[in-house]
Image (tube, rainbow, N blue to C red):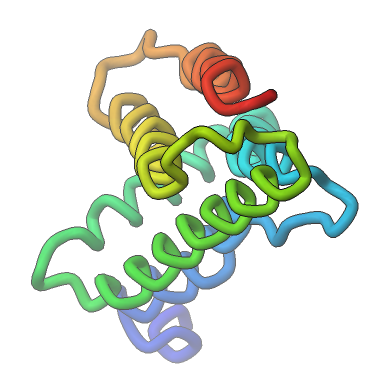
Length: 151
């Protein structure tokens, strides 16, 4: 029955990624400041972790698994990650315009820093043994991003 509906393991993973991983990168709220848009990704991951940490873990595992050059999901995950980074970049630009983000920063460097922090924390949560506190580390990264880039 599963094979008939999805067409195999790769199709099941593709459907999973399409349905759930998109929740990691929310569309920005039009009334949010740029800085609020930037940290919305962290807030969303924390919400998903609270709601169902095992589904969040599965999303991250599938995302990292797609990094393999042989993964049929590679293009989809690259597209989703590219979209997420673009949303952070848009938030940084908007924040520099609305003055919620300092205007003396290098926006490309900020986007790289913010993206690396979030993906690095996610990877550590997956790779390290139990005891790595994802929520605490995301909260710390969120506070650092606000401190380093906010006005």
